[in-house]
Length: 188
Image (cartoon, rainbow, N blue to C red; front, side):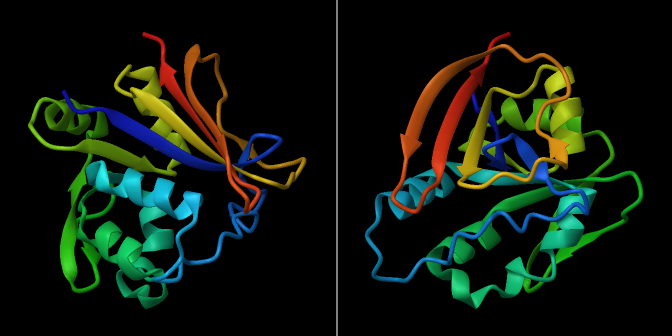
């Protein structure tokens, strides 16, 4: 059965969005084509493990003008743009993604995730989208949370979790660029 994996960029003090909603703490540079770092290997292994991406309406709005045209992101950008996409929104009628196939708009993300998890395929990636993440956690459909911890703090902003979540550590890996990957299974 497919897993729903949430991925959040966070600061060391657990801020996933700055007070203005921004992510200026994420300062990882695009990969060069000949880069052979452990971080790049990890990121590429992750994107190869998923075939579907789910985004909330705000994350979609922040991403749609950059990612479909992100030539500086190389193979990673090509793979990201090639994923099947769903946007959770009760207001959007369509969700274009540049010259790539448009995302499917769903007003019931929980039902969509349950349906996708029952289909064959690779894992499903929820990218950012804090409000959507929280509703999917509440519905019990999230299997794993990955936090990419950036070597900085902000003090104020929106934290990843508002409520109690019991988790089991799957992986803790540090990289030379200062990031730490924390992977947790959600205890159900």
